[in-house]
Amino acid sequence: MKFTLSAMAAILATIILWAHHDPMLLAHVDQSDGDADTAPAMAASGPAAEDSKDPPNISAELLRRYNAGGDMRAFFSYALQHPEQGGYFYAVKFMRQCQDSADKTETGDIRPVADHPAAEIVKSHHMHLARKQLQMRCADFVSEEISRTRARDLWSSGLSQDPLVKAVAEYHASFEQYSRDPAQAARLGQAVTQVLRMEDPLVFEDLGWRLALQPRDGGKGFMLNGNFHPLDSDTDVASALYLLPCGTGLQCDRHEFDVALRCAAGEDCDASRFERVERMLRTRPGSYGRVLTAYESMRTAVALGDTQFFDRR
Image (cartoon, rainbow, N blue to C red; front, side, top):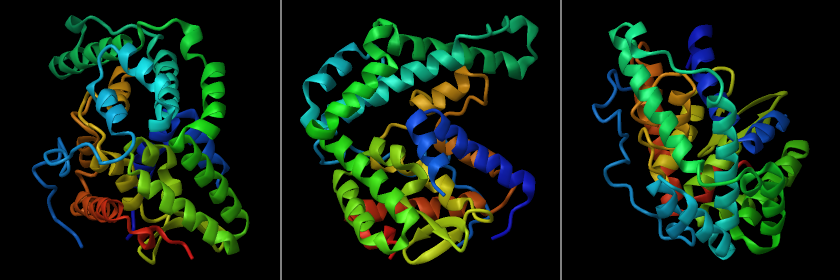
């Protein structure tokens, strides 16, 4: 499918900014060398929001506490006490989010709503609520508790104690090897099997594009179910990967970190990740429907543990 330059730029910006919210994910991306005419009415919450439930995996309790939001002290303490459930992985994710939200929201005040046109009054209100939400998540921590140095130390400890850290680290290592030598696809296939078994939404978010990215003929694209989608002409898969965590247990409404941070930082204040993608594609009939088709296919493959769907051999 073909895209205009402006449309491609808008959609790729969404995924790149998503990656930028997690420094580790951005580093990984940087290092790696059927059509509906109208969007479904459920765009704001997403097709998986109504029937989403905690996946039956080792990190289910961590995910439940993470999704609850609010004051995260109890969540953080629980995570540090349970590396065997993926606690170090979740703790590091949270620590990086606190660092990122501080970097992006501490500069610049929100102008008084009286200075805004009517539409901006609403946006200003949502920005204020989003900033308060993000501040509340991290306010109970001193800087040393959530420092980048401590995050690195926890990650290192997780390599021997935390199954999620081990699975993600092995996936990235096998992907790097595969990128240099496609003949090493078997190791990557084993890593895919492991992360699908985890069935954890924050793991899928950390992997991002790499869950389906494949180098080919000097370029890059996504390989799904045996079909290659060139990165320079097909953004449906990239958008679907952005939504995939929502279909595997992550609460993706306006309180979710990525959605809240974009709003707090002055971008559009959407009701969910789904609404963000739908809004960006609103002027291109059929595009959002194709994204949802790709998303549902990925979601089904994860639920079934279908490693062949993500196979790059």
